[in-house]
Length: 129
Image (cartoon, rainbow, N blue to C red):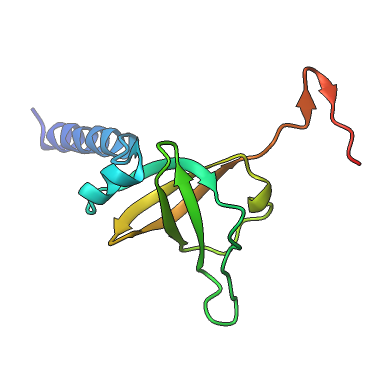
């Protein structure tokens, strides 16, 4: 075989390895209890925002950090530190998915996904009062 063919095969093998590695997500869905047991692992935690406690956000102190309370699907409530600004309409969300790691008793999230209420019920538009 020519040296060029060998180099080409190696480049293709490395590219395939990189693609497979990037497609695999290291994070998995969990709750706060499991995330507490494995603080070095990144998790997706699903839950609901505690709307009775206001979201703490002061852009003068840190524009890329807010905190709030969230209850996971198993009923465990934890303080969440989101390393982003407050997402628009967060208080209206029905469900939140946080992506991050536990640090002590706080969940530190780098990403947030929100499920907002549907505009439609049974195929009929909701009427806002």
